[in-house]
Length: 268
Image 1: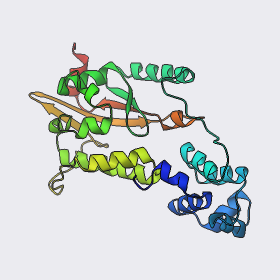
Image 2 (image 1 turned 180 degrees about the vertical axis):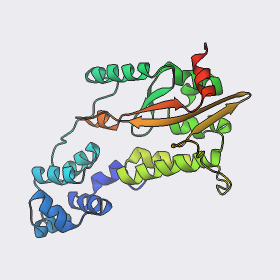
Image 3 (image 1 turned 30 degrees about the vertical axis):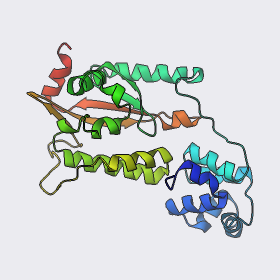
Image 4 (image 1 turned 90 degrees about the horizontal axis):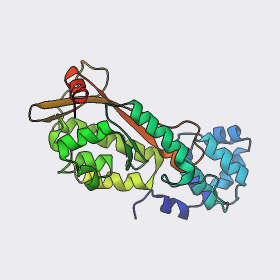
């Protein structure tokens, strides 16, 4: 099992988890103690396991460090308490209102591509613009083969052969995945990073440059005489109350040039 997974964290004590997250967030023990209203000595004995923290203290500490809900639950479990946040199945009845809102967002972004993923980048929803661009480059069955954005991009039968300046995009995407994995200590991201790293082609970045005509990184795909360029934005849902909702991401692709706009404005 990979180090850093949720299962690993459940075997740690609450104090060990607290210390690891505090150091990752670069918060001094004294500062954290003052913020949550306890003495530095008490926080120290909690970290070393000589004192069991109360449920309220665990939640205060987790809130101060802005821990993801998944790890607030894990710290509570390690301290011997029940979870605070639920995890509704995305396709469950209670998530219907969220799915409807996401569907509206994706539809409003037509004709341009948009999709929804979970924390591990598994594709949960798409709009017709996204389906159309994937089908054009990879065929209609591509999303059946790869239901994860990283696999869809990095696989040999994925988008990689059509990506302009692939070494640069590969470097950027792997860097982003690494940062998210380290920041969240999420087991699914750790497994995904290990898998995708084995697919990397590498290459010299010295001769590659970001298109400085745009203020954002652009992804350009090319097949035959068709060339499409995009930049992306990523949004999350505000005020989440459970794990599933907190970990959802909405990615919207915008055309970077007139040629790409023309591709989507023309009849399918």
